[in-house]
Length: 396
Image 1 (cartoon, rainbow, N blue to C red):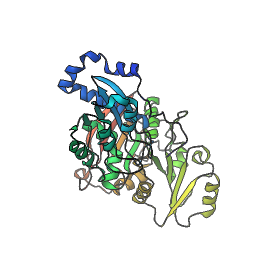
Image 2 (image 1 turned 30 degrees about the vertical axis):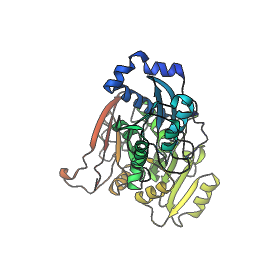
Image 3 (image 1 turned 90 degrees about the vertical axis):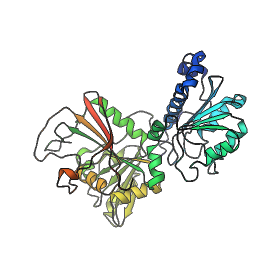
Image 4 (image 1 turned 30 degrees about the horizontal axis):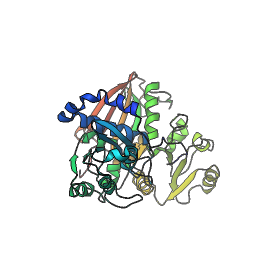
């Protein structure tokens, strides 16, 4: 996941001028605190800080922290990557002695166990903070309310659930990983108004406008991996990178049972990391060629979307983006490897009886069997429309 791109330092994040600009008129903060608006504003700042580490923290969550005293921000921090100190530690360092008697806002419950780093709850107690405002309870069984209980036992006031929905949305991959022992699967596709992802001849560049494509590039930087199948490699020859100088790239994953792939694909040539998943004993000469090009190859007795996601879970991933064609997409949906849909719809019509569609055969024969998305939102991106929603999860 670490592609040697430099992450902004989480230490000494606070800049007083920036903090003042964010707060606006600090003399008016007392009324805001009484109304709860100030708490929400500070939690939004926590989320803003946490987003600086998008793509770097797995298997850990994204977390931001803000320390406030006398209505002013005195310390800020975020968790930069797994193995490094948590957001609270950086915020306490920035606040120094001002942490005593302060209120700290943190987007996720402070931990109360020893992992790679000491428990943040003990650090907050030692620093003498008076109040802790938590965005959401940590679903990790090692935490799961333990941090909150420890703080309250030490006489510290704790408020839970400020901007909870936004906090959960930011860490939905982490939450899914903890609860289901799999990364969150996101299926992204771009289609025309009549539901085609390419022409009958297979031409697909470009379905969407530059604004939509730029948004996809940003999405890739926030994901741990992006998956395609063999047809996408053969027909589209994609890069699957962020297309941004200095930005991180996800691990690019190709699923191919037979390895009937082109030798000169762009995926084998660029600097971003690439992994090919195949089946045992398949085309050993081609595998050797890939390894010589720096491509990682992993064999499975039987390669399926669920097996791929189980493997990526073991690698510590939280969020996996599927940018595959309709056949693999249908298989991934059927096996529960995909939970979220991002559909870019372009106001174009190309027709074609045999033009490919974003999702292949699911075996559904009546409209009553259709998979109805939940928590659906949509917005305009340039001239296109982005529909976002979640597949219904069995047992949830």
